[in-house]
Amino acid sequence: MLSILPLGCYGSDLENKKCITMQVTPSTVIDTGALLSSLDTPQLVDIRNVIITHCHFDHIKNLPIFSDFMLSLGGHSFNLYTTENIMKQILDHVLNDLIWPDFTKLPTKKKPTINFIPVYFDRPFIIDQTEFVPLEMNHLVESMGFIIRKGKSSAAYSGDTYSCERFVDAINSDRTVKTVCWEASFPNRLEKIAVASKHLTPELLEIELNKVKKKCDIHTFHLKPNLENEIMSDLLKIKSRMTITAMKQKKPISI
Ligand SMILES: [Zn+2]
Ligand SMILES: [Zn+2]
Image (cartoon, rainbow, N blue to C red; front, side):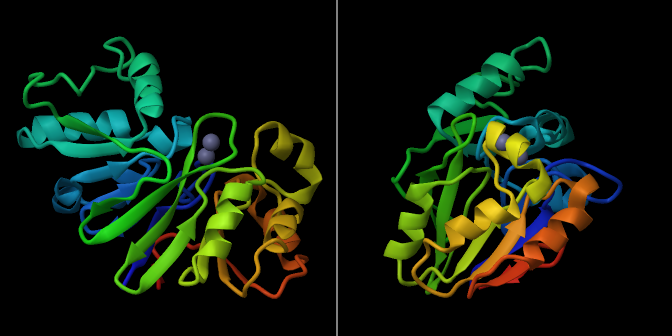
């Protein structure tokens, strides 16, 4: 069975509402926005696979400190799965030996803390019997969504995105996908900001949902926490045959 556990499911931080981290196997997370504040030390040491969807801060927020944690605790290492382009962005602008050390060279180049594993759009990779098919999403920067499969269970995960034909096609062309995690970042009132930052509002999400040719369970996430109530009431106005539920932190989605 596939399970997606949102450790953080918001597009920013506020009180206990945290940036994005989705745990998809006991050893694997997608993004690191809420990694350190959500797991205890033994659980953190078990995280050996980190998938980064894109370089925006709410998704890489804990990556520098998690790297330091793994090295200083006892020389642990972990695999970082992302595209070559996204890895370069992280190394150029964050792990650049100025903002924070380059943990792809520490403690040594031969046995570094971060083992970078490049992934490629539309080329599946497997972690813990779970298959990830990276999809190129439509966001301000290079950004990955996924079809995620384990056994007979599968789900689509949008990451950060605006309207994206590739994502809708992937959902429509895979008969097994009936669960979709889809972002809804801003309320309808802020559509201009949503479009400029290549995100969705509930109204824009409704347009996407109407392109999907089957009934799915939709789990919305990446809501701006300070606008949550307004976004939630806009989500209720969506006219669609889909079941729409807002993700809740620490409440697993079991597929
Ligand atoms: Zn984001
Ligand atoms: Zn983003």
